[in-house]
Amino acid sequence: MENKSSSFGIASMVCGIVSLVMCCCISYLGCIAAVAAIVLFILERTVAKTKSGMAVAGLVCGIITIAFTVIGLVLSAIIWDLIPEDIASEISSLMESSMAI
Image (cartoon, rainbow, N blue to C red; front, side, top):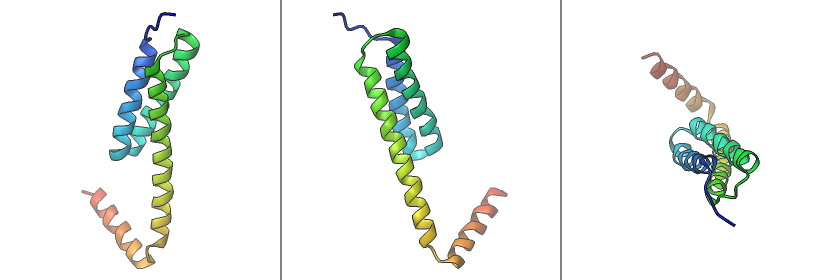
């Protein structure tokens, strides 16, 4: 059986790698790239009907990115809840004043 790579598989792997890099910096862009990697994996399996390791790599990277983002959001919410109210209001006011610039 010939192992030919599909453009969907390559795109899935690229989106998966980009999603891992972006989840550390800008989490919402990482999630968008992760969803794209998963969708491209599905397209590669259904439309192209090829079995590419690159598509599987994209799927794995996409799932890891989404898991890291969810864990990060949960931990952020827990930590934010543990901050005393006066410090939290000071942080919120500093964030609002920095957005006005």
